Image: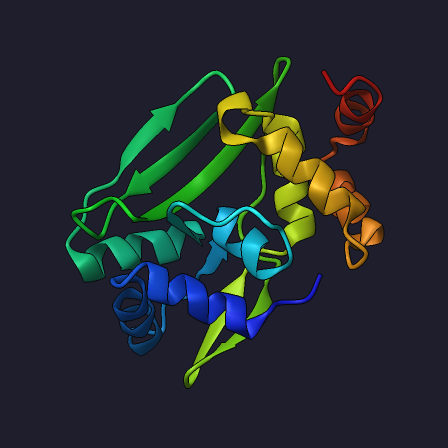
Length: 186
């Protein structure tokens, strides 16, 4: 899908501490990818984000936490798990690592290595592609987070690339699980 620079600027204006965090990560040369609802909104989903999820690989997560003087904690839920730290006191921005979705007795994890750019000031800002987020939303299916609604809206978007979607599904060895979830959406 395509990133909308105007929507990204709107999100940055909505979360005033976000720009400073991006600038600090950029200056420290710490790689990241904006995920969750911000990434989806910027790529065409209608639902406005309520917070910002910044995703990191293991090494980058450690560096980001060191830069901001943070300690992370592990969260384990029936439908997902993750390492999390929060660089702002209002909880509007989260640093996430090892985000794992669960369905049945399987867990699915893929680091934020697939990225797409969005223009913002003089920085190279990267997003997690909507197709990857759609895979994880389908697997996780958190009812109180509108995951299925988001998935269906994304899947029907004219710019949604089903080839990328299925490539990510296959990289997770999740074709059987995803096919079952698509065939039985409730």
